[in-house]
Image (cartoon, rainbow, N blue to C red):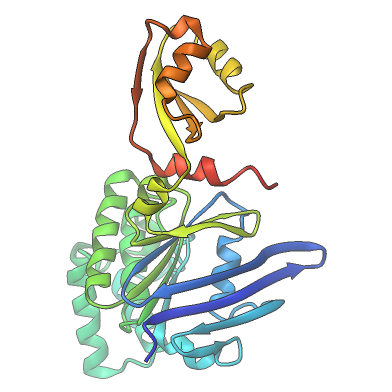
Length: 307
């Protein structure tokens, strides 16, 4: 039996003369949280729609939980959950009614349906919202209910399309704890995001840009294999210094963070701090330090060069 929940080979999707997905391949292990990181319009949501069988790819082969997409999409739908960024809930129903309705759609009946509703209400902290109409809920409350509804039928694979875009940081953190609980229980999760801190939580991460896959690995490995060193510079006239740095071919990028400048320098420069002091005499007495890579650094280092 395959250890992969998703196998996609050389998939493309075009709309008239626009290419939304450009020849990408994916291997998503079972029981892991696999992230898609990229800006709006890069092809993340289109990829999910192809993987769920909602869209037919223009080219390539897609197998999800052993089912060929889109030919066997109807068989697959019993085994997947899908939560969108717009909270696909019924506004004029309360929390329990939403859960009962979604459960019925997935074939739950009678005692089993009642038990699953109660379990989901307890797991996702919905007891006080049981009779609350969705239209009167906050973003965080809708998010919890949406996840409860998307998992009421115990899906083997859960698709989450930017599920935290409308909630605050505390609710985002709590939401991710629930995702790790689901992963620990064996659910495979594919989540799209444009938040760097969320991307770093994933077991494996793909970075997309303009329909193409720019990187695909564990976050720590991506950060270790960027091909750049990061130096943080605390000095006067940071805006002028940044402009001068960006004229040097050894510099991949530079960005200001408060009173510091974060500079990505290609690893061909063996001693980046010494190089900076030698190239820029004004930095001879400045505070320079090597910094830990972040996923934002990875994103900058792998995107923007090919468009």
